[in-house]
Image 1 (cartoon, rainbow, N blue to C red):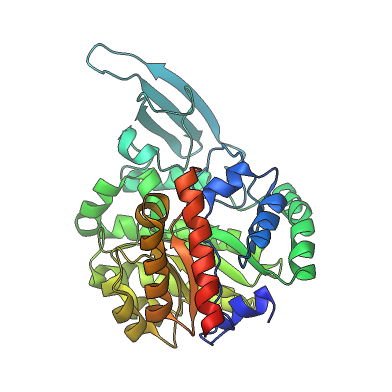
Image 2: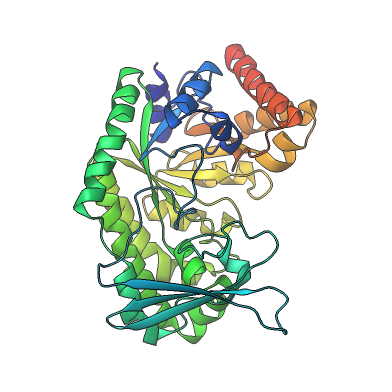
Length: 390
């Protein structure tokens, strides 16, 4: 079987030979690479089942949508932006103020410039850095939604043309080398965390449910406009980030009422285009497993042994939803012993395989240290050794 055939077999809950190993995120290696293509080739040289994602993410990226990988994020042409800095005696950190001027009114965000702020005096639009540092978020209530709509512009023709141009060599490379072609990222509630705040979200799903529903619907519609562009490239798998769509923030009942209907629409759109649908959710998802399966999701990406009961997850979802993960990236690979890595790989392959399983650290290998890289080597060699024994 080719690498693509192994991964597709796993995504179809079949038994590939061997079980594939594909790192869901490998930041340390990407940072070492000269280009995204070099990054893919390095993974192939390591023996991994490298997936090719479009649009390509270059090793050094810093933009206004850093945590929303994928197509550019732009606003309606009528929008203008103003930024300033406010230093007051009562604030230990300067306040970075950004105002979006729209035909429906102004939207303002205020962010504390902490010592670890990485963007000078600039405030991005969509970034995890905003969540703990924001004093005021862009969208505070229903009155802000008409203006916020102007920040959700569909992909422009020149952006679509650039996407096709930049992706074409990678699509060609994936097809020639029989590698899985993926695209993304989609987004839902994670974006509400960036523009409204997670603390406020927890309260407002109960205090202002119609406001959250309308905001989520606006984002979901915008997300599917972006999905359509990526799906037209003929990808095998579309990936949606959903790190914040777990039971830290939603009860199963609220998740079913609010999130599942939009998720099902996303899944259906991917399936209509002939693509599988992947859902990144790495923590506190056990009570949601049946609901995720019922939405039609093909693969849960990020099955972390620190957060999932592997055997129970397999019991509930085996044969219906592919499981991607099995090894903890930070605690085990970046900080653990080789023996711990070997044990976790063996346990994952035993508990989650052989059908419908893709081995990976969850969710990222960021640290470019001798310990981490040696443990990556141990992970790969252990996977290969166990595969050869079967």
